[in-house]
Length: 355
Image (cartoon, rainbow, N blue to C red; front, side, top):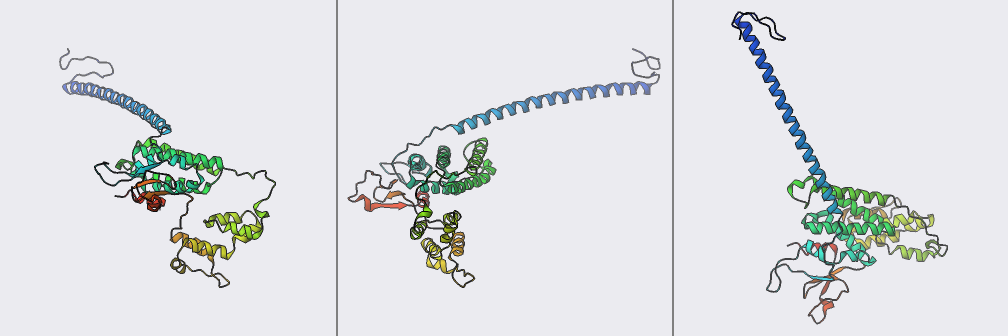
């Protein structure tokens, strides 16, 4: 080792002849070593982070694939029973409560949508659940909800009927899910967020399919609706309970447009859905000084709920607390079971399980 003041040469260094020069030389060597060590550590950390991120990405991809596969599973966990007990408390014979999710799982809604008398009832029930009750369903009930909804959409795509009704249902569900998914960290939805994102993508796909429906006129050369006498046409139009159907029918032909503007037709529609008090609060006069019943109807619709009518409904026996479809026999001990049954609207069905 050279002593202080001795001349010696190091690669890349000038001659060091003094104590100050020797100190600077050691500082530079030490700094290079620390810099190399820091660079090596940073590179090692970077490599570990890349490996960690890669593993996370692979796990997330596998989990998303598994969630989508589970979501596609068509296995249904409800029993499709014709009637069920609705009990709100524990007794010696029965224990526990009957919830909305349990009733939705057990009652035969899957077959009910194939019945034209019950189709609108089930669709309205699905819409009410989508609006405010989706989070009260169990994980299995939520999955069954989506399975039944898929059957409804496939039926509409095949029959090309009730298209607007299902569009509104899908839009209501998508809007609710957009809000709920943002709060997924608060456990408002059961399941992984990937599963719900996939379901939202499925809803958008269904909406696109409904928008692409092209209704073709059947090759029928017999008697058509416009060939009927005007009195019969008007009588049929009076049986439509939705003003939007009247407007759509009036767009088919000029003659039907004239019939769809009939004041008496819209007056009866207003009087069917709304009370006299509600009508008096929303009076609208036309340019001729007469009541404009058509404008009044659409204004009333925005302010008050319309009367609901269904070909078939669920009913509750007040004697034995059994819930079933109308006309379905159940083991009732009453002398006159028909007098004990009350019809339930979709909203009444949901209110039945609010404890």
